[in-house]
Every structure is written in structure tokens, then in C-alpha cells.
Image (tube, rainbow, N blue to C red; front, side, top):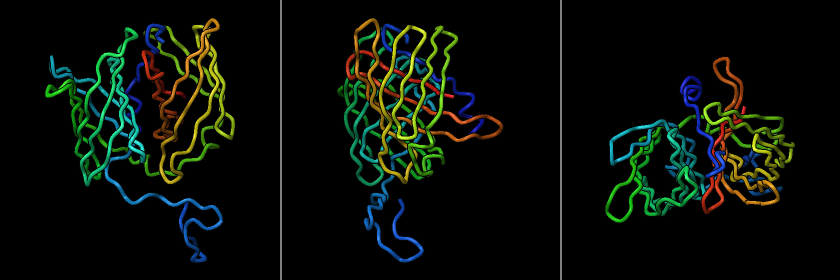
Length: 251
């Protein structure tokens, strides 16, 4: 996994701007003293890496996806493709609705997502009506089975997309709140949240302010610990539910 994630340079685009345990040794039950319990085992949630294939030209691009225990999630391809979706789980089948955003700052399509999950992979399609737009083949990364904790994200993180001349720096506090600035002189203020402490997926909400104009973004993140000589990083996928999105690999 460490090698694969380092070979996947996630594109950063923001529309037109370019931018816990249950029980214990004492035999106690979950829920006591405020302890959290994982939900029933469901196949499908996870942090994934793989490929996204455009059906019109059969071109494939590296992709990352986060599917949360609540059924909310996002996927992004290295070519600038971005999907936000909500799915329901039925056995090994995932199905629901999505919208996609384009690099030009418009909502490109909306439709349905359908996928089949195994213990190690997720395969499916995005469709408009009966026509498939993109298909995907993704591998579940083991990091998702690690617990989440806001203190894990603490520190100063940065991302630079040399192709677009975009850079972003954020400082995250131990409670998950963060502030930041980017190369377009925009400021960021928001917070990460815990979805389920058993799994390595976080929610996030933040406001980006540029020249006095503010937009609110929501999305998801996954923490990847140091591996194979490379440092830790945080995969971030977020959008404003309208025209702009941010995909970043904070290091």
C-alpha cells in the first residue's frame, strides 16, 4: 500500500479557482461509561485505491475513494473527476445516488451509483439513466481498519500541486479544528470529526474565504501513517455541494 499511495499524485482542484472499543479486560459491555461500539459488520465501507474508467473512450485513471459507515462518500480520479455519493448497503451490494463536479466549476452530472463489494475490493459504475458514465475497480486498503482519533491529525500539513501552481497549508489542533491558507490568498477554518472511532475515516467541514466571499465545504478524510520510508499523509476529499471541490494529499 505504501508504494501505491506514493505513486498516486492526487489532483487538487476547487472549481474555477483551481484550486472504541467494546467491552474490555474486565468483561464490561460496550456503551458503558460512554464507550463506543462499532456498527454491525457491513461489507463496502472503506478507504480505496484503484482505477476509474471513462466509458466514452475507455481511458482509465488512478482513483481514490472513501466510503463511510453511514453510506456517505466521495471518489476522485487523477484526471480531475470528482463524485460525491450516498449509498445503502444490502449484503454485498451498494446502491444510491451521486453528483459529479467538473474542473470548469459546474455540476456536470447526477445519477445512480451501483457497486459490488468483497472483503478486499469494490467494483461498480456511475450511470445517468441506463447509460454508464464511468466504471471503477478499487482495492480496499488495510489502513481503514485502524482506529481514528482527532489527536492523530494534529500538526501542520501542506500540499503542493506543481502542475497548477497551487499550494495549501493547514494547522490542525488536537481537537480536530484547523485553520489554513492557500496560494490564492484564501483562508480556511473548520474541523474534522470522528465518524466511528473503530475505523480510519473522518468527516470534515470548513469555510474557505477568498476576497471576502465565503464557501462552506463538507467531505471526508483518511489518515495514512508513515510507511516504507515515506511520512504520514491525510487524504482529503471535499466539495461545496454546488460547483467547487478540493482533493488534496496533505503531508
